[in-house]
Amino acid sequence: PAGIGALSNLEEFLVAKNSLTGTIPESIGKITKLDRLWLDNNNITGTIPPRLADLSSLDELRLEGNHLSGDISSLFCESSKTDLSLLSSDCGVGADPQITCTCCSECHGPFSSNVRSGPCPSTEIEVEIKFDESLKLVHPWLLGVWSLLDGRSNVILQGGPYWNNLKTQCSESECVFRHHTCASSSSCYAMKISYEDEDNALESYDMSYIISLGDEAVENRVLDPDYSFNIGNCESIEVCGEEVDIGSNERIIFDSLVKVSGQEVLTRKAEEQSSQYNAACWMIKNDTMKIDYSNEYSIVQRYVAALMFYTLDGASWTNSWSNGTGYLPYNHECEWNGITC
Image 1 (cartoon, rainbow, N blue to C red):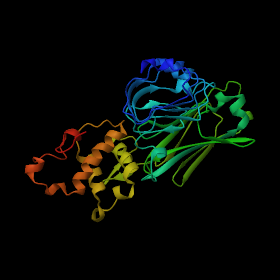
Image 2: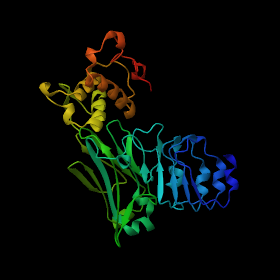
Image 3: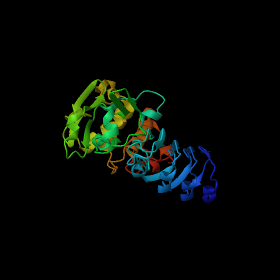
Image 4: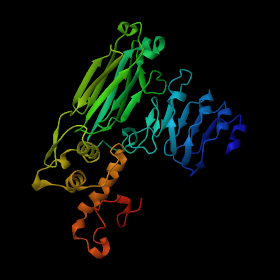
């Protein structure tokens, strides 16, 4: 409610999973004693009001599971005055809409490792950053802005110079930050790092980035203010009997599906072809509908609908039920017979 700002002595507001609707009122920024604010898993819309950054006593903020959008990095990540022990939002891969947050301790989305109950179907990618403990206190901007991008050039992990909200473990001399998410064993990932170091101050400190993808690991000590490197399968591979290159539409679909089904079942020989293989190859070779290749969630949703057809022997379904073209037509899968989105 808009009048919530009048509750000046409120210390906790935990209303997760209450089917709340509407937007977050600006007046909530007046509750300066608020310590825990859980708004997750409701039907809240709009953007995050800037007044939330005025909550000087705030320690935990949960925003995931709503329909919020926008960039909250400027509110909670780019200022050293904010020190939350928990900040979670829909900033994970596949979230729709997706919030931009460079310092969230939890990023939720359909492909986020931290919200999964089991291992990743394909593999996991991890970013580990080691740096001098004094660097965080004396020259925090040297920690830079980093982004890990997938084959579609979409950011899947990122971080900024103020890491108050991140899971950082520090000893007397060194800090280590780790973040991870599910990945595709067939894809090529790019790590990009940039920071301001006009006085070459970084040369006095020890900082390195270690990116791990399955059994592969790449470690780089950063000295260049604009630096990037790759990890993963960055060469062409055989997909459904044909060579496909990194960046092609066929490769984007394949890498997205490997993330949810694993690479083995999508690359089997003809005599061992699975329903997953047939559904993937239909999308890659025969499907003529224009897919939003930048949206991994859209790719996976269409794949799941096609997978149901192949798994349940859809070719044998009677025309009276499927209307002849009820499945695997070239319109949107939400328009297929029996499917409601």
